[in-house]
Amino acid sequence: MKILAEELRAKTIPELETFISELKSECLRLRQQKNSHTIRPKEIREARKNVARAMTIRTEKLYEEAWNKHKNDKVLPKELRPKLTRAKRLALNEKQVNRRERHYGGYRTQKKVYFSYSE
Image (cartoon, rainbow, N blue to C red; front, side, top):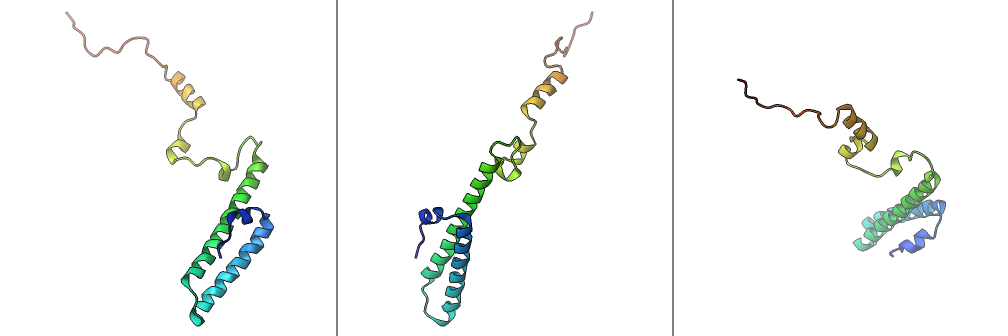
C-alpha cells in the first residue's frame, strides 16, 4: 500500500530511519515470497517506491537540518553551496575582474596606428 509523503514528513529523522529499515525488510520478504507464493509485481514495486520515498524525505530533513545549522556562517559547506557549472565555479569573481581591468590599463591613451603615410 502506498505511503503518503505527508505521513513521513510528520516523523523525526530517527523514526524515519527505523521505518526505512522496516520497509526494507518488508521488501526483502516480498522478494523471497516471489519464488514460493503468488505475489503480484505491483506489491514489490510499491514496496520499492515506499523505500525510495522515505529515503528522499529523510535526505530532505537532513539537508534542512544542516542548512539551519550553517545558515549564519560566513562560508557554507560544499554540500550546501549552489551547484554551478565548472566554468562558473572557476571564473574570476567580481573583485578579481575589476583588479584585472585596472592592471591592464583599461582604455589606451593613444590610438593604435595601423598604417601611416611617410613623405
